[in-house]
Length: 285
Image (cartoon, rainbow, N blue to C red):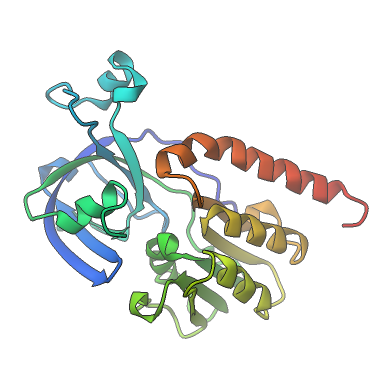
């Protein structure tokens, strides 16, 4: 039931916007296509992700664009900024890739770009990566996160095995941000409205209150890093789940933009693992 990523090279792709849809006040759906997706493949995992590349203002890049050459020949400050998004759908016949982007007005890079995108616009991206898919051998499943994890949660819910108990918990700002999540009848989908609370607080409370089944489960918990850390600790040490039963990582962190969070994320993950090793070794556990 391991969710460790397979080793793969992140390939450079070029997508052309075909369609744009506003799913909710704060979620924009983009469908990308074009000849630049001829080598793209996805489908093994339900948390497949790509890294959109946003050029730095005023910087000239090699033509044709070559990310390996950029990394080799240009200073780090001139590399394109990256923003990571889940593959919501991949249609290999139509060669169309769908991503859902959270939008909060003029804040950030990807949100404003997605909201203003028009058919014909092009963007380069790397990928796909990925590591998780619901294990049909698990006795039960938990999918939990905030809106940043909603695309991956929805894609995973569609692949939940029919007849296996599952809890799907998504925290969003309010009722207007809810979406249809196709899931088997054996899954319970619960929306949590945070309103004016800190991101993740209501999610953590709700997951902790669940009557999770007995047996060997599998959990996918992603979103704001602080909430993910709390839920990792709960599942590992109060529900006695092993690391290979969990896919749990922070997609973002309060107080950090994505560039700052990505720079700090590796060390943050190591710190979390060290804390968990200390708790596991504690005689009180």
